Length: 222
Ligand code: MD3
Ligand code: FE
Image 1: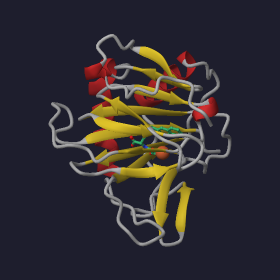
Image 2: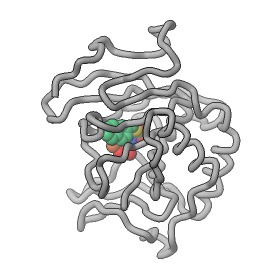
Image 3: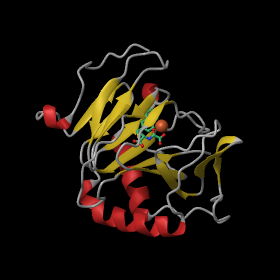
């Protein structure tokens, strides 16, 4: 895939005129700061989720611990062990269903998707990633969801991170996009299967999350 959008790295600090809503790439729409109005409700809901389903470091099929800690809410959650990656209805640590998706999460995700042109998005899974300083996510594709015509909606909270957005092959050069507290991105259409990752998160503090970055990704798995 040839990227036809701006090849310059995008970071809000360095681009003061960057609009709060823009097409990032074909099918990808960034809604700068759109989660900020709900940040306290989101954070309260998050605390209740992690009480029932604490953050944990998944083991990859290769046997390594991920630097990112993860949990889920909604009907399905992303799990991994030596047998591989998959979506599962139960938290393997507790044997219980994942906590339900809070209304404030569901409303934020469906509103963002609607604004980006996906009126029928109804997420049944929300992965919650926690990045402590130094944690990163290596380049990957998200292709385990049943209906790839549905987008993924991501919500960034807390300390900023540099997101890497590539093409349809691992080799294609990536664009760097700074994701700040409250940024919501809708990844659909041609961007849905693009390789992506997160560079190691730098030491910083945010009033809501301390030294962490939290990322929510909403998916329509089944
Ligand atoms: C572009 N999470 O959970 S969110 C993941 O910041 C994941 O925690 C990152 O990649 C994070 O799988 C990135 C942005 C994102 C999520 C899914 C995408 C971008 C995407 C799927 C396709 C293309
Ligand atoms: Fe991903």
